[in-house]
Image (tube, rainbow, N blue to C red):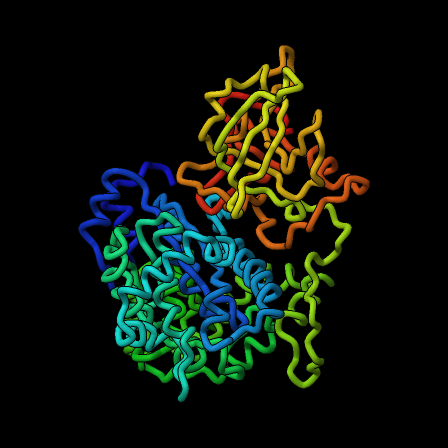
Length: 528
């Protein structure tokens, strides 16, 4: 974009094609001051299908408007919603969702580096969050919780308690993801108004809510992942797309509940700002529309024929799907797909222990247990002039004792009470007689004289919060890093402080759910 957008232009982009905005005044006020922080959550249940392009194209709008966007993979929600995904499959499904949604965003040209991806279980099992769930359950009535979930939680004859917790968790996510706004379909409206009612009762701010209309499925009613035949899967072959589109309801001149037109309006138009109807010369040849209204009008008065409309959508849709099919055409992706969504006819009894990391020997950052810590006390080591002995809270019942060689580099009072980054799964080591139970991570300059600064977590971080490398949010940390395997040392070779002072591994940022880890001054330094 050539020029900086005005607050009005941003507002227009953020709200176009939405059905409803709750909190318009607040939205306008924020846009005059700064960029909007917004999140979209998706429960990792059924296989995402092409209707997911509808929220994706709004996410593209948000990014064009300069918003800071977080995508939440709500794995815990998926479990709570009538156990739509069993624990064993959740990890695999979440990986599938991450891959597929990133592929969709890339396919529509969204720069992934502007987005933050996070999983619910990264923070929803923390002590603070869990306490808030209980605090909320002491003020919310059963009636309100049931009403809030009515359109989202699967309605069954004997409803489970988990379905009543669901709306509360979704409300708390707004606070814990530190956003101004949540985006979702209008089917979420009752959960959104529930959040607006109850978050203030815990002392948290009421958020803005942006709602997409329920777009009729391209090939049927509401596109849900559970009606198999009608939906077009993101990995469907071209011939399947053709076959399913042939059956799509698209009556000449009828613009009501027309899934084919809706797909053009909500996905293809916003992405390209135009749409081309491809047709034979004898019917007037190709025609380009730059305004959706004109296309709808010409379809209504039957200047545009359903057959041509469907063919044109088919061509555009295959262009969007091709890069996704390519990405999922590798042996590992095919394996992930078949494991996350096993064919029920070939079901085997589930294994008791799901694999922790696909290949236990693979050297990836998720094997290291990086956490946020808070330094509770700092003393000099009684038997060593260069060592400090710190007590650090890493979110466990007792603080850990950590010995660090920082006396010459960092003042005692600078460490006291500060937040730090700690490696928690190294084998404890005696240092001059005192056992060190973790390692404090610091940035170090490469030149002489050596300078060292502890890494800085994002403000607002809490002890025990998980630190991960972008793209490696999943995967379990090893119980203990075996010194012989040198996993940490191999990873450390690629640790670096970027020119923007961001801690990185192979060019990808160290993150928490609140943002990136940084240091004060040591550009181009190492991390140790």
